Image 1 (tube, helix red, strand yellow):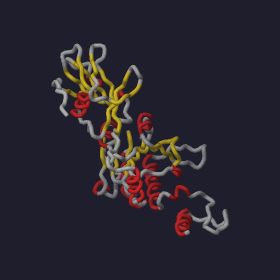
Image 2 (tube, rainbow, N blue to C red):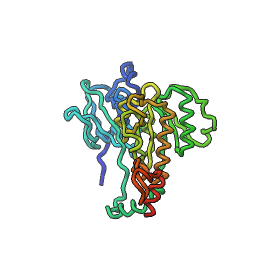
Image 3 (cartoon, one colour):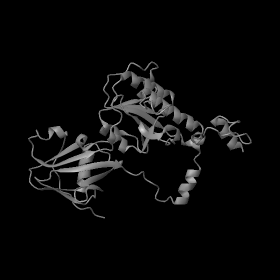
Image 4 (cartoon, rainbow, N blue to C red):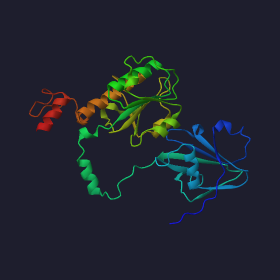
Length: 321
């Protein structure tokens, strides 16, 4: 059908929150948006120039402004903060938003858009497709990185371990160190490493369909965790750990065990990453069934507590039974 004619809007200018007060240009509207894991004060700002006074924009035009600032509209849905309902609502393309001297800013939040599904695929088709995928065909891919890391040697060690354990990429967010010298195997020739200035940049570039896994104290014990087919493992810095905003944005939260409660559960960040990735490798090799094996399991026909077997032996015996 036909489309409603659009009125040309004023040009867009990007700015940081701290620069808004010093900007002498007349402002019609301010669009502040955040990616998952980012607090509003660290959000990105799009300034819509105008002559002040009253100004209106439709939801679709708001999205166009964000696209002009680098947002991938195909990968992200937009929500706005509704003061009346005190919550985040989906941004309707045709809804009109009014700006005035009393209200120049519109708070926006991005969330991952759902993965597209084949419109002709019914539930039986989906189940049939899933049943054809063996465990070994679901290896997927994964990456690992540190938010706010401050030690270059830890970063180099994690980079090397990631390559050895099958990672597809590594990354840093807001790193506080210079180029690493701890990579003694020239990992950079085999495994890409990405540096992001802040979590907004990381979220914008994060691969679609790969859930974020926070590695931080207080999460699901690693022994009980089933690793996603595709995943991005996010570790905190050596001194501050992961920000609470990042923890809330992650789909999973996993932690490492300690020998006894009186021992600290804070591990070296490079060691933490290596342990988590090794756990993934082991569980994937054994078809994730190793997570269900517990101490005391016995081979079929054996005596419980006497003829106990290694997890791999128990799994193999069950498969051949």
